[in-house]
Image 1 (spheres, rainbow, N blue to C red):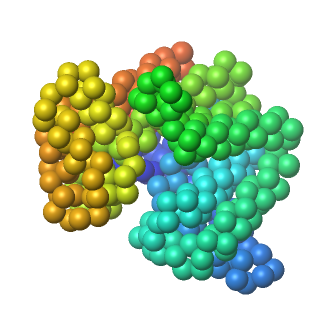
Image 2: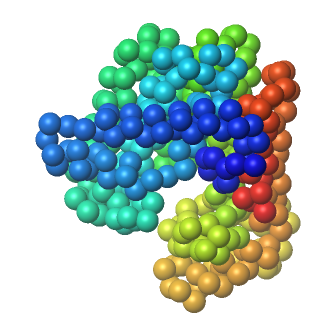
Length: 336
């Protein structure tokens, strides 16, 4: 048994494992090439997060989805570079909006060089992704443009919040579909498209990616509450401290409104208070870890992962399908 990709994904087929590793190595080389500039400072800023590492979750999905056609087709690796460049560009912008100081264990670009440089570097990465896309054909450009529109729409919806009368949980799931699901879906779509897979296969993998992307983000929501820093690689309760209402918090508020229990209302009031205070933050984290809302958020994560798994049913059995199924299991495992 060998291991490749995020979450310790096991690939039990040696030929598949070798091909996926080779593809990811080529993607890494492509990322470094795409982030070079004649201006040394731009190269440094653009390669800042590339060199910091990351799961390369989206390129992995491109590689696995390409196994349903010709995985060596010339557009496969460039399309994986495109989705990862797009993802990296959004991280530069997200860190500015969130005023984040750390990303992937290193100082964020905005903390190191200021907001203007971080925003412009993200724009530079979008431009380089577009340049690569132009060589992949008009259909690839259209697919990427639609996904990027969804991604930005999701970010705007998150910032604006739910409209009056809209269920906050439904709103939040729509946000995740745009912010995360859209680009994960495109990763699967590009892999299948560029490999020349049948259109039915392309559609199946796109649906799988959409659901897997949401499950992936929901697992992160659960981990932010449930895990310790050693397990998750980041400080627990980061979203809580920053006042970000992720799914466990939304499920708590939903339950408080429905049942009106005093302890639920008290916890909501605590979460609405200043959680930059360490003692208050620790208490909120302790109570939320023991609350049924966290279990509900886990069940929501499992539901999306199971929907992703079910979407794969029409595909032929084989090592690539098994690996995609195992990614569903890995996402659920992350959420406990």
